[in-house]
Image 1 (tube, rainbow, N blue to C red):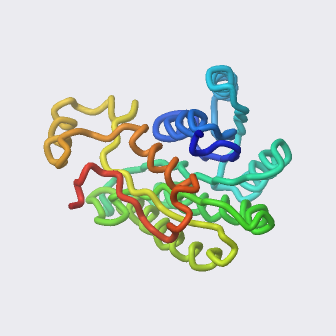
Image 2 (image 1 turned 180 degrees about the vertical axis):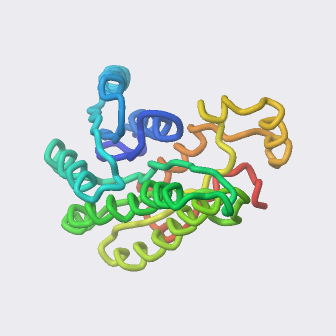
Amino acid sequence: MALLQGKSALITGGSRGIGRGIVERFLEEGADVAFTYVSSPEKAEATASELASKHGRRVLAIRSDAGDPAQAQKAVDEVVGAWGKLDVLVNNAGITRDQLLMRMSEADWDAVIATNLKSVFNMTKAVMRVMLKQRNGSIINMSSVVGVKGNAGQANYAASKAGVIGFTKSVALELGSRNIRSNAIAPGFIETEMTGALDPKVVEQWREGIPLKRGGTPTDVANACVFLGSDLSAYITGQTLHVCGGMLT
């Protein structure tokens, strides 16, 4: 039996990169999946149609900026209205605005905090009532190894991802008695279309610094999400799972 058979999931930022990988794996494991996107509605709807046909599952593409509380609530309401429940929330939406602190603008700080951290607050608040009524649910928040160890030139990103970990633990303590689990995933160097634009020599240096001698893939992160979204992790909450090839070891 598929690990997510009969479950419904909402994944923010699910149209590309890691998010797209999570959407695909959830569908492969039998879930009905809704994903949010911010731009290119035609492309997002085409993706949803393609995936639904490929996997034989229900797929919803929802245009929503999770950094806005009203849009976050609307996205959750749309999923529950369509399917009657919401079992798994994956807070994946994220951006970077890298710059040394001395040169970092307030606008770049605010944008990263809003997309990476406030969105997690907004989406979790929006889904709480549904999961409390169900007395069941899994919330998976995307952090980063940078949120654990920091990184020069990424003070805004590191702060947002460290905040995600603290938020995740607090939610686990608050909602555990209602059988709602909250966990974080901290990816390391994951190779996506974004990293494809980097200098190949830089990418190779990153790979050589990782004990497993390779960058991660969206599927590596998605597999961890499948585990945390499934009943296999029924006794796991408040934890941060590092998917980093050992780079923090």
